[in-house]
Length: 274
Image (cartoon, rainbow, N blue to C red):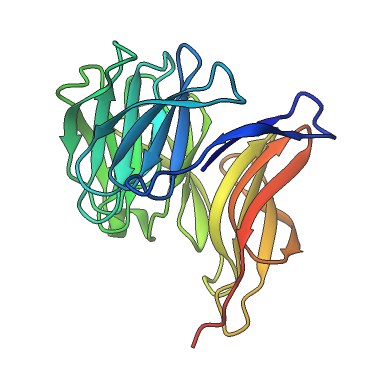
């Protein structure tokens, strides 16, 4: 379901009494994004669902909009009027137009296997996929996205598993067994700016976030006795990322964010690999 939590006092978050329980026809919510006019777009397995949260204690479902196939993640343009949703297998990247916030519509689609959460940098959208590497698109015309650059597994020298915007021209690529710093100042000729690698069994990175010059990540070891880990990297020199420290977690860290020097990790229980 959808639950609203008041975090005005960060040392005392309060769950509001109302909630919007998931509908059996929607399934589990996978992701969400804030759009204009006090509304959220919720991502379910087969579409997006516009929800009014102007009264956070009583969220109201306004409408649902089908997309192609199973979708997992959503990112929004800066104006909150264009959404980019990605899915599993060959479901690719869908572009949704919300110029009329009451009537979001799919306007185009780009085929791409196992696409990650998109990164939006102005008129450029970057996305990764297990079988397709890294793809950069010009989305200045949302009805006709144009491919700018695509780097495959061999060119990346690793398996991409998502990416993170470091600043307006730099992304950090998660290679599971390492991180790669990519300069995107020229989207048609992106360049590797730095890299830090480790053995996959030592640490499988799942999510990451910026905190000043630090890259804070969550994940787990990937061996016969897996343990969760939080790792901190110094990226003050983007050409030379440095691993600073690690902390054991009670489970595999799947998602992470940092607020006021506090890292919050969503984790799940680990099982041994055989």
